[in-house]
Length: 216
Image 1 (cartoon, one colour):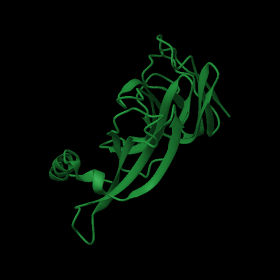
Image 2 (spheres, rainbow, N blue to C red):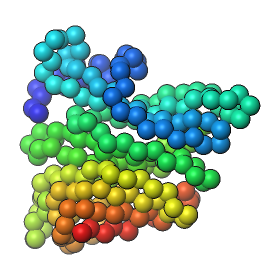
Image 3 (cartoon, rainbow, N blue to C red):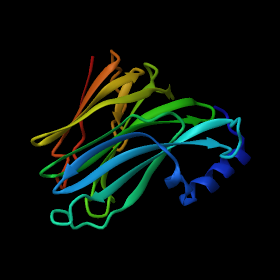
């Protein structure tokens, strides 16, 4: 999808409006934690919003907390927007005794490079829904020697909390995948396969350790 500058400006203006919260939910995942309900939701919006033949659609991704029982949940309900995506996101939310995590795959068009699909993972503060930790998985096509590559894609399938670590798995398109919040010196290892598993040790710990990545 190619967008001229005036279209991009229009999108920014729309995203600044709280009207996205009134859009119908097209996908949702829920979990209960310490007597409260939490959800991650996807809303679809046309651009231009009032055009019967819109130029394209995009998606808002948000998280929401709800009080189910006043006797067991004392939080103040909130809704927080996490991201927008030009492709329909895949979403997940999990919780255990340590806390709350959401993940979603999202896509954007990067001018001059092409489509770029990634996975973002948030450790959330259950009270405020603020992001305590954010990890981003991305893929690329890299040359064998030093040089710029082309965008790849990662898609979310499962998000699982195990005792002591977080597991993310899904599919990827490219020959390289990594957590974009980490720095890996050249040469990057070129990879085989189209499936991946990322293990984040001690995801709730104070030290942000890089993931162990396996592809097959």
